[in-house]
Length: 82
Image 1 (cartoon, rainbow, N blue to C red):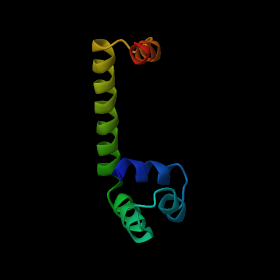
Image 2 (spheres, rainbow, N blue to C red):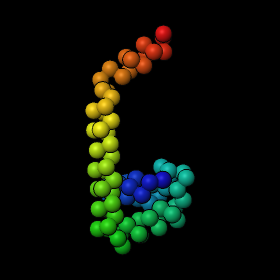
Image 3 (tube, rainbow, N blue to C red):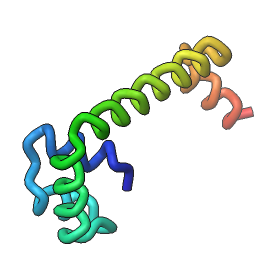
């Protein structure tokens, strides 16, 4: 379970119980631990999450520039039927 998923759900208003029930691999105790850590280190975690989002956007842009996403479904279906 990625830290940014738990933090994102929490900042969107989900309770620890809701987060834990949505992600069965995450125990309620661990969910509370992540939230507690986030609340104690909010600035650092927010910077980390922002950096990860920025990197993800850069990777997506690079991938889309190398491999045109337009018509992917059509190309895959054509390959499947060939």
